[in-house]
Image (spheres, rainbow, N blue to C red):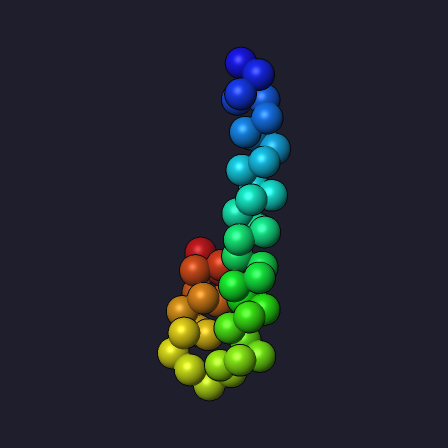
Length: 45
């Protein structure tokens, strides 16, 4: 139960923490690369 309680709030935080740096790293580095739209689509979905 304790594990689930800690995991529930950490799940979205971890997801955002993992996606945020990826998006920020890809956007400025590769603005016109197929990787950027792919990342944005993944975050949007």
